[in-house]
Length: 120
Length: 120
Length: 120
Image (cartoon, rainbow over all chains, first blue to last red; front, side, top):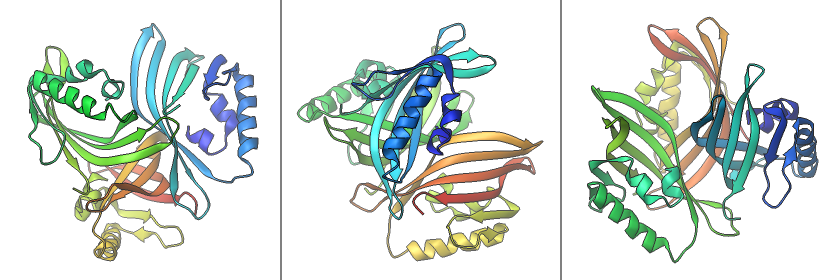
């Protein structure tokens, strides 16, 4: 998430598997495959370009359980903050993030990330 | 805490020992024993029923030390957030949580949870 | 950070090495050496004495990598909260904290802490 917050979209996309599913916005089709996720990230960046701000994704309360050998379920809380130039931090959103993590070429990667937004 | 936030009160009560003490509100007698804690949780749920909201308890900065063999002291920060339907997250309370954790039938359970509220 | 938040300035200063560098405020010279850090902490305490409040430093997203044998780089998010008597928590600041941790006399201590403030 530090990579994403620093605008390193390729590094963030690389935390997903090649065939990953990433649903980050309720009511919107999840992005599929790593190139699909990356193109989704580029789109979000373009939309936010007019409103410069430093977003921070704070993941806490990470609860990990083994689904099957080599597949982990991680359920986390995510608090999204933003700070605009000269301002203080504001809370954007409180979420629950459900990941399926797999060993992929020696790396732990995300095969499925589904995000629920509180209050939605 | 994820269990509590999802309304699974029995699962949350089960993280305490049979004879646990749980003081969550300053100026109010702590709940005692697991059934006492559970009845306290039911009461809180009933009080909040008229105001639908998604509470989130974010524990961070967990500091663990061994008190005696098999008894752990965990001192954590807890930030309580709430999101109402259609709204964004709001901060409810900042707390310090002092736990005494023990091995209980193969599980790590809470024998004593005392919560201090900042600003009180 | 719990020590700092409880006003135990000496205990907090002791988490730094004797020759540590601590830059906590953009545009201000970092404090140098443990006594220099401690005198800086006393100064901050004096400045805040007129406005009683409970500050909380919530570090999350701690990312650790080994720089060289025995030197660790830790990059964390820090969310600074404050609660004034009778009030609820407010967000003060969102930061990125870059630490260099070393083994020092059997303890892991901070040789360099540089703090970037979001929105600055």
